Amino acid sequence: MYKVILLLDFAEEYSKTLMKGINAYSKEFGPWIFCRMPLFHRETVGIDGILQWALEWGADGIIGQLYNKEIDKILKAGIPVIAQDFKERFTEIPNITGDYHEAGKLGADYFLKKGFTNFAFYGFNDIVWSRERAEGFEERLKSKGHQVHYFEHKKARSTELWYYKPSSLSRWLKGLPKPIGLMSCDDNQGQHITEACRHVGIRIPEEVAVLGVDNDEMICDLSDPPLSSIALDVEKGGYDAAKLLDHMIKHGTGAYYDIIVKPMQVITRHSTDIYATNDDHIASSLKYIHQNIEKNLHVDEVVKQVPLSRRALEKRFLEITGYPIYKYIFNLRIEKFTQKLLDTDMSVFEIALDMGLNDSKNIARQFRQAKGCSPSAYRNKYLAGK
Image (tube, rainbow, N blue to C red; front, top):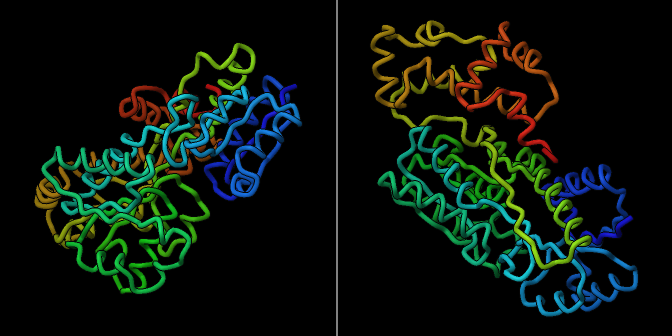
């Protein structure tokens, strides 16, 4: 029965979800005994105190947020350690890290599909997960001929509630071209943006559409308006980290690898629920589609919402969105279906009924067409331990 120290930020949804995956592995192959060590130990007793406690307790391993400068002491202790790269990646021990560039590209593609031509990123340049998300975001947009407006959050202000007052951030937001798709490095910073916009009267999502990362539901729902976010496969990352720690305890720390937490999909909430167009008829059509996508929606119903012939609407819709109306409905339906597949334990049949569809075999076939695998295979792919 292993003894494992978890030195994580237990207030954050990311850490809580990580622990779900770690615990799932423990129940399957353990059980393990856990010491949930609050982060303030890192600041009060330091790495020396943490390692001393680990040796006294007889800890078999540590998973946690550690400072890179303390690597020599960590290695000297001889305890298997997996670090969460909350600042920078370690090179001498395995990291729980992420495909941050891919998350940035996913955010860029999301805004491109919504018709945006102006883009911005808000984050930290001195933290790996923010910096690389910004790089992926900018790389994808530059390949499409677009530039990115960038605002760096200063470390000196990280503990202040400065974004509730007039600031350099609010001045930057007011000076951005509108409408604009803005990606923040995580949900916490996304809420900075929504609050700063509210303070200076910038409309979300009409003027600034805001996208976060982590899909921390509490933060996203507290935001005004609710914040869209990129969901990450964190629970599987926790499971895989526990599996790696098990291997390191049994076979030594010589052979290790990083645990890569993958981005899954964008969860759309009100902060991005818009299509960037000045065409009122297309805007009305898109609004109707988004509001009614969980019904068995057809093109004819969309056409009835605007004073245009079907042919005229189809032509303008294709010119502006890049998709025929039926294809846009199809893509959005698959996006909503995927979200329910990952967020609930409903069967394919139950999800189809919930979305007003009476043919579950047809939606399963459409899903395979879009994703390259069956709904059950896709769900299993993102479940911890699969």
